[in-house]
Image 1 (cartoon, rainbow, N blue to C red):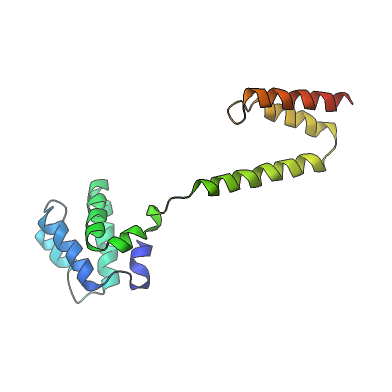
Image 2 (spheres, rainbow, N blue to C red):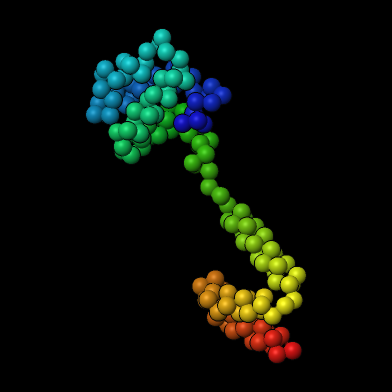
Amino acid sequence: MYFLTSNSRLNEQVVDKIILQLNRVYPQILTDTEAEKFRNPKASLHTRLSYLIKHLQKKGDRHCQEFYRALQINAEQLYNDLPSRKILSPVFFLTCFSVAAGFALFWYCSHSDTKVIGRARRILGFSPIIIGRHVRNICMLYLEDISRN
């Protein structure tokens, strides 16, 4: 709602088209009286749009989906720019994982006491899903060698 109401992203004509589409194509979503209320030119566009979105949210998910469909039909560029339409790339997740792994490695290397080795062994022992079984076994053998020395 904030995205749609901020910076005058929608103009009067587009909002009226959306309201009319919801009223004419889906009269169960917006009745004639509700459509007239949301098309009232005396109220500001921001207020009308805010009340419309709140009204549709109260009615349920299907009504909100029809609003998004009407938005896509009448303002496709705005629909494509919605924050909920942005998909994070795999590079983002790989970057986050790399940062977490780097931090864990730094934390491990900065503490040389035996408690850290025991903690690392416990973490690696319970992580067969995260890393492969063969890699986990190699890491466990390495940790055992370090703890013996």
